[in-house]
Length: 242
Ligand code: V0D
Image 1: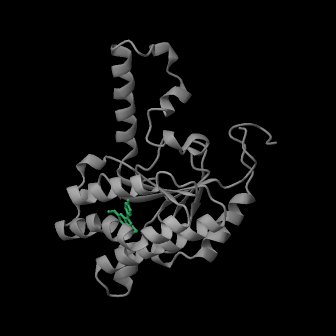
Image 2 (image 1 turned 90 degrees about the vertical axis):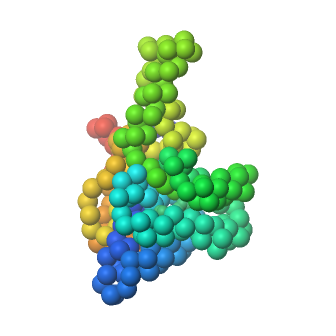
């Protein structure tokens, strides 16, 4: 653990409660999704302000396809709107966009915008804004296993060389280098479960839950979450931390 104690480098957020936010206001669900998208902009800029290096957002899981078609269609257009509206601002802040998940299953236009956003920001050196999109952790792990097995079969990898570090290299977060594992996972809207998000990477991650719905979660809330995190004593399984 070469990292500075309790520096919040990688924050992961499950942005839950957009539908309930809308329902409480007697608004259609898509208004909640739209407000949730607008809040990504605010919170991403706030996270950048606070010195967070990687912000990973859970936007759409492999299970969400079961929702009504009209809602899925609306959701699939959000990345397109997101980059149409916010790209100049992201570029001005040198934000590097990454999108991880099973992207080849997305509608073509949505897929194209993910590739364009990553290409446009690839050279940016600022905060990494990472979207977990059509992502599922178990499937990520199974995909990694298959990749390693095939390397063993072709003789480019020896089974004895598979350790935790090597395994991590086959996961979608590998490219974040020192910041692969989130320091803190935040879930909004009162639910206290992981919902198939980043299972391997969360092994030592601190957890934080708030009752606020995602569209209501503010920069001030984020500052409080960061402060609470910095007060924690992270031991990574050791007895005493240094
Ligand atoms: C809906 C709260 C941005 C969660 C935020 C389709 C509910 C708003 C994106 C997005 C969603 C995804 C990928 C990307 C850029 C932006 C997004 C979904 C839902 C799932 F590269 N907001 N947003 N994706 N909502």
